[in-house]
Amino acid sequence: MGALIFALKAALASLPNINVNSVLIILTTLFFGWRALYAVAVYVAMEGLIFGGGIWWFGYLYTWPLLVAVAMLFRRNDSALIWAVIAAVFGLVFGPLMYLEYFAINGGWEMFFTMWVAGIPYDLAHCGGNFVLTLVLYRPLYKVMERFLGTPEAHQRQS
Image 1 (spheres, rainbow, N blue to C red):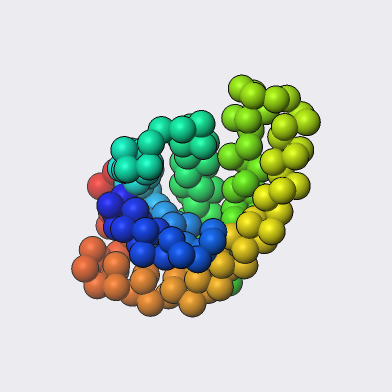
Image 2 (image 1 turned 45 degrees about the vertical axis):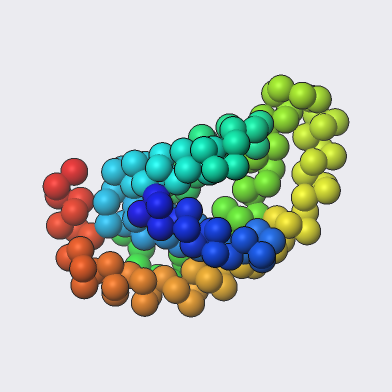
């Protein structure tokens, strides 16, 4: 799943901050529980290996696992709309979460605030893209995963 997330992000790279990462991580979490962190680790490692481990990469170490934690909190939910809202909120806060490292390492609040304000258009695109893609893809991808993997409950019991 981590390699699939990476490949699909690369396929959509021409669209700024529009990707299927969130919906795939949510679905991976629903089917595999905390073991979704393995897929996230593969995805994050591939990002670092292919694009270099710049300062931006460190944010991936805590931001994507945070989505797994949120999905675990809401894992009993089966509404595509609720998952779309969760993915949208995640897309909106993704930028500020990523800028935390800039606050800690480079420039304090001034750097954080500047990066956050400059990134608002991208955060809005990320929010909108996550909402639409999750709303459209959640149910069909869930059914495909269920067909090939069985029910999420079966995987949860194996954890």
